[in-house]
Length: 239
Image 1 (cartoon, helix red, strand yellow):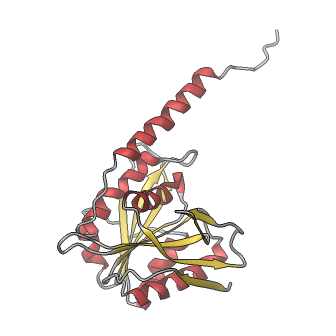
Image 2 (cartoon, helix red, strand yellow):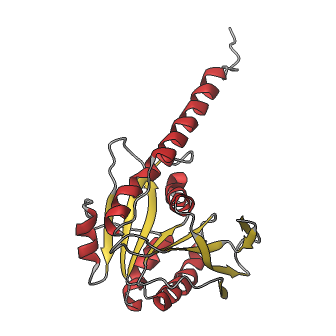
C-alpha cells in the first residue's frame, strides 16, 4: 500500500507527545481524539492518503484534508508539553495497518516524538469493566506508572494500536495504549471521557473539561429512552 504524507505547516513543536485515535468499540477513541482537537482548536499540520483508503475528504475550517489527519498543539503553559493528535473516521483494514503505522511512526520521528499514546476502545462485557493500559519500549514503564492505570501485562491488542506497540520502539518511540471499555452498539461519549484523566497525567499541562462529553452522553441516552418508550410490540398473537 503506497501512502502519501502531506505537510500543511510547521508549528515548531518541541518533542511533542503523539496521541492516536482511530475508530474502535463505541467509537470512544475517535470521540476523545476529536474532542481534544475541538477543545484546543488545533490546526492540521499533516495528512495521510492512499489509493486503498476511502475516497473522501474532511472539511475543517473551510479547507479539505485527507482521511487521516494530524493536528498540532503548542502548549502555552510553563513546562507544558507540546502535542500532536492523529485521527480518522475510518478503521484501517488489517492489511493496511503496517503501512499506515510505518508512515505515521516515520513522520512522528521527524517531529522528535519519543512518547506515543494510543487511544483504544475495547468491548464492554460487564458494567464494572475498568480502564486499563499496556506499553512497550524502555520508557513505557514510566509512562504507565505516571498514568496510574492498572497494567495489563498479558493481553492481545489489534489494529493500528497493536502494530504501534510492536513497531514503535524500533523508531525510538515509547508506546502506551489506554484501553477503555465501550458500548459496542452505539457511540459512547461517556466512556470516551475515560481517556481525559490519564492523558492529562501523561501530557504535562494538557487539560480539557469533560462536561461537554458527558452532556452528549446524556443526550444519547435520552434519545434512546424516548425511542424505547415510543416503540410498540408488533408481534401477532394467535389463539
